[in-house]
View (cartoon, rainbow, N blue to C red):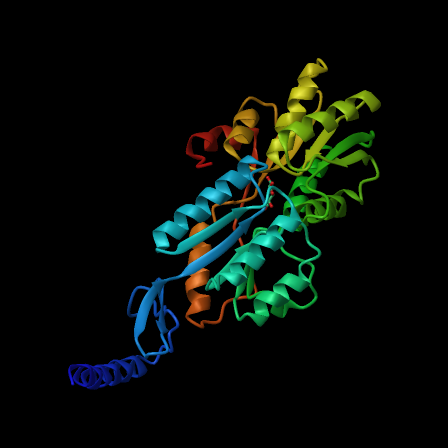
Length: 346
Ligand code: GZL
């Protein structure tokens, strides 16, 4: 009897709850009506027995690695913002290996996370695993770097910098520096990770600008894999095989900072004997610029964690999000770097 009573009362209660839930009309998605209420950071799930529970948004993120100061700042921004947003963040460091990112994404799919984010270490080779996420009904957000998939339905949106524009800014500064001479200017280039969007695009943008100036010549170009150690090693090799280097274009500060060690060890003055242009704008890069060792910094902003969390809330609330959001960033000469250094956050 008691059991029957319980089940009778239970049914009435459940019907009432389902009625309330149905009136809510948000079919379980986290609402994000910015006008009237703060975005929810939970999703409502209804079990087979009809009970509904609010659970934390589970966000699976696969990070490239920890190869540079920029990456460390980016990881901090994402982790702190996810905590602030009340998300359950499952974070994986791929140590710059694509196979580790693919494994992590598959694990997120198995765990049935609500949303997957990742910064693809290289542009190619993602279609299969992205299709698995799509088939599992899990939205994917690209951050920082993009993929070369022709099927753009495989991801919801890409939030990151315009790397071609960054390369153009670097080229424009160089053209301006040497506008009054026709003498040959020998440039060496430290490229980022082979096959990565920033390495491909920063090279493309830089070359697009200098190609109309015959005296600006790239005499050597090689990957330093975005790390200080490799940047130093490759710069040593450049110095050994090229006696007259005028400019170093480094795709990130960390490689430039490694190269500075090699330049000084060779008895040359970075920033004077060899002018240095770099991309990122980490604090150590600003420090070197304020000492006159780096001549021009093109900023690449890693602090998009808050923007990423807002995008996740919008996606899970079923809102339209733009396919591409470009992060805002500037450029800094030596004087401007000196001024900005005290306020740099990373
Ligand atoms: C750029 C980012 C690059 C940085 C490097 O958005 O992908 O990767 O420029 C980092 O410092 O390693």
